[in-house]
Image (cartoon, rainbow, N blue to C red):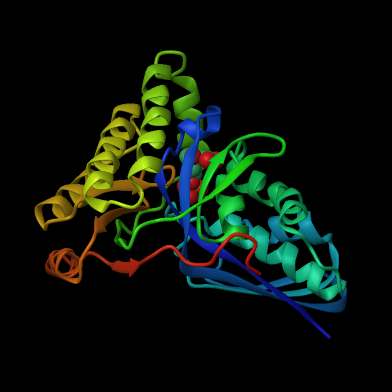
Length: 291
Ligand code: PMV
């Protein structure tokens, strides 16, 4: 007998960092995910994981206890790149445990149970990654207990994810923004205001694109971008992207570029290939409450 579960990976369309301080944000699930299989077994809990991360065992033990499980984790998400790998792990673990217990878990209970795992990795997470990892689709999120969630309907755009192959330390970056307050508060406020404009432009990539680039510039002003991320944003815009930004905490990780046609997507992909940048084309996947 075993139990299984999965969590979606995500990109943040607009609003990272500001969301930690109660401003809204928009995120969407992507077609990369983490899958967990749990098998009861006597003795200490053991973990087999691809790819592996030293904090996995702590996360697993926090959620499942020290004894009694063999845990198999397989993820197509790159770790520490702003694509929500830790949230997807927590969600997949919680779902696998519920599956093993024969429990039908609703999204709110999944959220409450997965957040302790996210705190191991991030210290003070807003909960955005966990919410989108559970629900899929594209969501408008505001931090709270419980958070406020609104499913959104994105237009027919897609994104090209561009990977720096560098790991960003989310907890350290969130702490560095916290240390900059109240000086950085106007920038956080400007990011929050941009989210409202993105909601209104979600169906029109030509209006949405420049807002994403503006979000990137505000994140750079916060000090969480890197020259490598700025370079990938420039590469995307020069290749014809409608907008581009880093996603997640920054300090490495990924940027993504917005495209509204096969032609633009291909141009961005081609520019990435020429510069040897690992990339991935995706669209929002899943929907609210999807298993
Ligand atoms: O780097 P990621 O994928 O963990 O995203 C972090 C997003 C932040 O807004 C910076 C932090 C948070 O908890 O929302």
